[in-house]
Length: 301
Image (tube, one colour):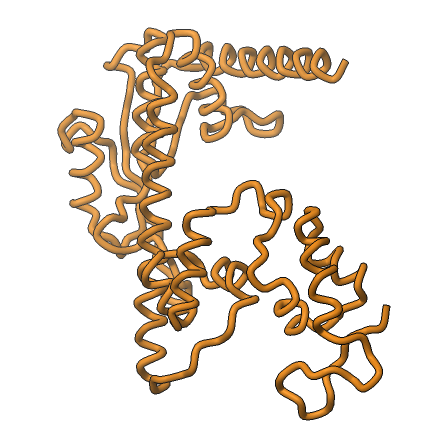
């Protein structure tokens, strides 16, 4: 079947002389659409490679369900198309719906563009509000996901806490080296949650509170007193019970990100008389690695 082409300078999608007429292609295009073919399949079947003409041929004919993305937000897509037909720009639709402009573009790209009626400054302001709205939607989604995931955990059994604590220590705690014997249980971290889990794990193992020592490690340019108060409150002891704070010399040429009122450095948690405990931790970790490897092998077979 002959291909439809624009005549040079013809903005109405006119047909080349001698080519198949638009009216003659409309009926088979609609029939193929109703049979469930995609735009690409219809394009290739009828040899219509001009998107404007293909849009006109399929005007009013909904896309088959199978061509829609499984995870597409159908309600938002329909609303975006409705707003586009009302003459809204991508920026305005983004403000209204909180979708990304890339998604909006995919949803409405076959619809006519609205006439521009605003200045560049006005368009920039709309775009800024649209981006703010998008960020707010993302923050809301992020919060809901985290809350849902938190609820999935529930309570921890002693064994679950034990295994978690071993993995956490082997990731973040000090380790013995053949060239530098350090059989001491020392855990250093800046995350309050990690510190809480580690302390709960030490208590589960029966480590006496009298054998636990704390100290702060922080840049000298930070608010040291505030950091000590923060960590003391977290672990439930007086600042006076902390060992001497370790200060890291500040290099003004570096562009540190860990600054501001919420920067408290790291807390070092040391367990005294812990050589035997360290050896057991190392053994526990080897056992976890072996068990995980066996489980993985069973899964593969």
